[in-house]
Image (cartoon, rainbow, N blue to C red; front, side):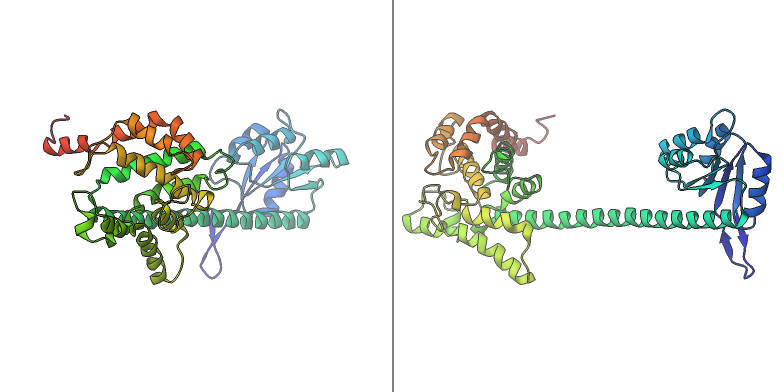
Length: 383
């Protein structure tokens, strides 16, 4: 209930619920508080519990202890167990004022204890103080809920921008390459499977957190982004490259890392979510024994994300058909990967691959180029 101030503005009246079996106490309380507060009264615990959940819900409850039926302690216990009423401050009204009674009341969650007979000014002061504290707590709670919502909203927006950025860059690379979009999906799936298998391995657990695995997965399609800098005559050549052409092709790894670094330089800051993209683009052609390119990194000097991509990329290249080669069987490709353990590839990553062979074959079938080409030729054939 609201009332008009002398100035004509609306004043919000807080609600006080009095639960007491004494008509005299209810009358005294009403006389003391009616000018400032909206009063609700119950003469027993059962009715008090009902009124506590009825709109307008009370901002504070004045609760007697000695009542027939459910006593005040039990009413308080039930109110604190109910999510709809547990935050309402409770002040006990009682002639029981022993240390044991006080301890019981505060132990159940009461905020204050007023002994009978009631002193008017004391009750007014305590009711006003505890309502003020509750309103402050409610404001902070609502503010926190709002801030959490804003953080969640901004986080989602940031993640969306990150995803769009990565997909746009990957799409750019795809338009320049003779690889298919399914190559990007397959290698993404292989990398994710390897990361999930290795996340509890002592050598990988610190890096392969849930957040980092997600970023590595999203960054995987950027492994060949540097091919945008390779001339068409070399990049799209249907036959085998000459040694000179291959040397130019090999520059795509360094070009990919440089392209992302240049993008960061243009915006004037490093983008942490692109760290894995730089690693994957720049180092996925490195080999465990140091014979790879562009830097000849050895062993654990090769970023973990790039070690995962090395196995994924080589496997997919082996089992995929290209204008200049036939596809290998899984068994043939797996033998090459396993034979490269400790030479081309990180031994631990190869061990994970061995355990995941069925998963690799499943991903390869799911994103098959042949299936897509068949659907393109006969789009209704799958219905």
